[in-house]
Length: 560
Image (cartoon, rainbow, N blue to C red; front, top):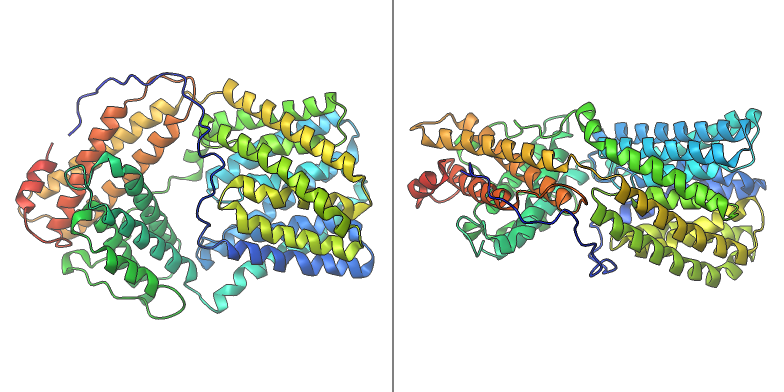
């Protein structure tokens, strides 16, 4: 075990990345689902308003329609509840913004309210792990509503429009359950199998038991995918034959990560391909000792436990958004909410990732303004053309944003500019100038706030993650030392160790990109991971999930 604590020479200030910040990656496996859903949720309400001659109300219907972007990776039972909370959060932020706009005309007060709303939305989205697009859409809607002309008697009607389209968005997102009721779980399991196959292709070269650090990114990606698959299955409340079959496939992916040299990558990929469509789930047999209830470890902490570490992030968001809005006002820009939303969109798990997002936001918005300049003559042909352009850009944004944030901004930026014209014609030159200035101001001020408000608790979280991984490894090793360990206890120990190692890697990666903190115990993290993954392999072998050769040696290596 890693009882020693090697010192680290990592500097307190870390370099900000430039290479690869704008590189396009692979699209999300389900990019088409939010893309098609937002089109289906947005087009009918806005075309209805167009037919009624009330396109000026489209901002409120669009607020509800944008809820269709959320929760597409969740099983339908969990998605139903998550989308209800998304719609309620959207309505809550919108209600506060509209009431504030109706009660005061002070831009400073409105920016302050917007910054506080953005901080609350950021913390709640991160704590609940709602996933993309996170707080950005909520902040965009509430911040824009703060500067929309409003009277108090209009608020109920506008909220009713957003409520109706939010309900429509809920129906759009739940409709696929009628055709493929287990689709999200099948996709999550297939992703885990493919990630495990990718790591198995490396054969774990470079270290015992598949612990070579040259392949650590592939291994970390594999464990993250397996963890996501388990969480998807945990969210599937009703037991079923399909769920039990998927559980066993995830176990096979997990075992392949523990012993990549002995995994059959081709078989893993074949199982993943078979999960497409609605055909039967492949049956991956397990030994009797591992064939019981497999979901004995719940890795998620309570909501309240996740809120505490997010305090620095809340302060960053509130401060950065407020200062960005004030700076925009000082420059005489008529739409300070653009600077506010730019700042709100930056904040990620650490300073390095926040810097990358700032670069992506600026580049995407500036190029997006040029796209707007090319498209605006077409949009000005009539209100119908305006609506169709916005719908097309909403699809394009979701099609591109999973490849890289700046690519999605190529469509988000012209869509946001066109939405301002729902209430009436806007001079394109002025819109473009203000958008560029507010983007640059929001990015500079927002990133400055991220540097000023550092998260000094990251080192403590790494220490706690190390302690949790050590305990889990010691527990598994003690069971392995017993002549006849309880099969359920051994399965629970293996799952607990896998969760602890995945948490350690995620915590260490997040801490590595944070500024102005004490040196991190990098060597100790590596040693703990090596010991933990050897123990995982030994545990899987003892359960009969791997060939029995060399079991005694690996068990001995796994002991502290």
